[in-house]
Each structure stands twice: as structure tokens, then as C-alpha cells.
Amino acid sequence: KAGVTQTPRYLIKTRGQQVTLSCSPISGHRSVSWYQQTPGQGLQFLFEYFSETQRNKGNFPGRFSGRQFSNSRSEMNVSTLELGDSALYLCASSSSGTGVNEAFFGQGTRLTVV
Amino acid sequence: AQTVTQSQPEMSVQEAETVTLSCTYDTSESNYYLFWYKQPPSRQMILVIRQEAYKQQNATENRFSVNFQKAAKSFSLKISDSQLGDTAMYFCAFMKPYGGSQGNLIFGKGTKLSVKP
Image 1: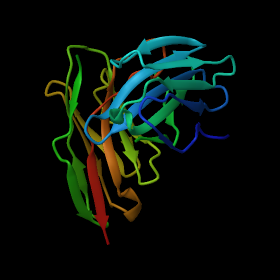
Image 2: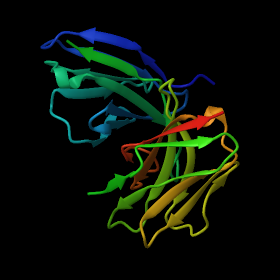
Image 3: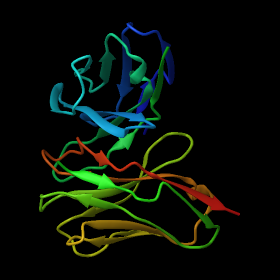
Image 4: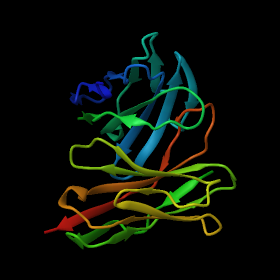
């Protein structure tokens, strides 16, 4: 079974631009969550999508948005990039069902804003 | 709001020895889950072990075990017989469950563990 795939792995953007990151979950997983990882703030939850609906959202400005498609693939968009958006963006997928299911993480997208 | 604190930014241990990583958390919830994740240099987060708050028995996974003290809000990870491959960042994480899925993990700042030969 293929793992969580995030593309691209590395990205360099200029301040003011926008960027779209992609996450393909493990087959059969319907929940996709996004996290931002920086040296200063650590790992912070951005949002979670389940069956194409945003189910939970962290404390990030509206410049950060996401969506999920019918095949559970998810995209995250950041508009009007700022230097502080430079980070490792991690995506995690988990299956639906009862109880709490393990989140499987991708290798992340390293975004550098210059 | 829930918070997770890892007070040891860095630790080192000799191969084959035992090491304990500390984690404390703050919550008013009675039902929740706690996790330890490992992030090696490859950056991929890997679940090491999980603990349900309603279970008094400490979780164990091979060489990894936890000491869960609910009243003290403490959740430490013990790694026995440390191996070079255990070298990684270790993150303690809290989750308040809802809807049957792991949607919102609250992470500590991490402990960088180095296993020395």
C-alpha cells in the first residue's frame, strides 16, 4: 500500500506570490490534516478535511486555505506569501471509522519564501 | 486550551542503554489520547506509541513503553536497548477525540535524541 504522498517536496517562492501544495492520502483514507512545522513555533495544526468538508481548523489567517476532492486528495493554498510562511508543511491521512485511527504522515513539502 | 510541554530539548544515550523522554500536558478534558511520534532526518513523522486516557495500563510497543500519570498529567517515553536508528526528534502529542478520526494533534516542541555508538 502506498504511503501519503506530498508534492512537491521542495518549493521556493517570492513574497506576495501564492502557492498550492498537494497531498495524496493512503488509499481508503478519507481524513486529511495539514500541519505547519517551523523551528520557532514547532508543529501547528492548520486544518482537517473529511469527505470533502473542512471539519476542523487551526488558528491561522485566512491566507491559508484548503480543499479536498472526491478521491480524498487534498490541496493547501497559501496566498500573498510572507517570509514567515517558510516552513515544512506536513500532511497526514487517517481512515474513517469508530475510535481514533492512526495518522500517517507524508514527508512534507519544504516551502521557502524569499 | 490544551498545551504540551517537553522540557528536554536535547538528549543523548549510548547504544543499548535506556533513556526516558519527558512530557507534560495541560487539559481540562477527561477523555483524550496521547501519542509519541518520531521524526528522523527523512522528515517523515512515524507513530511510536499511543495511550488512551481512560486506560490505566501503560502502553508498550516492543522496546518503547510509556509511564502515564493521569493525575500528574505526565506522559514519559522510555526507550530500552537504544539503537542507532532511534536517533530522531521525538514529539509528544495530545488529541481530544471527535468523529473517529485524528484531526487535530497538539504537539510539544520536541526532544532531539542522539544515540551514540
